[in-house]
Length: 136
Image 1 (tube, rainbow, N blue to C red):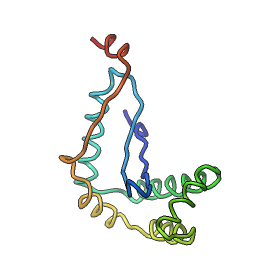
Image 2: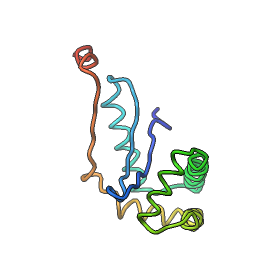
Image 3: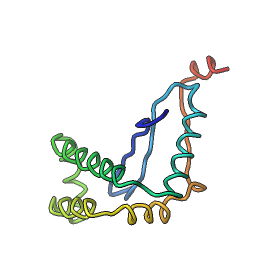
């Protein structure tokens, strides 16, 4: 029902280091169902891991997103500024992408279980006051 309903990003800046962000835009009446679907999918992934096809699609999407972002001047400028701070070059990107391409389903599932604790996730729901009035 909510397949492809979420967008995930890793934001890296000198000040924040790394923030994992998962967000979705949906109709206010769907908030509860969407959160339930997310929690069920997260629990399924923690329990069963990932299929080869899921991991292949995730890697492909992530790599394509990085390639597209390198085509935007603003993203390149931000990356260069961050890399000055971290003392990195774009060779670091190439190595990262090789490492991600080499990740196995076993490694991906182990990383999910190790680093994502559903009890520690923060859920934020926002909307306009007009939307909230209609929801009542």
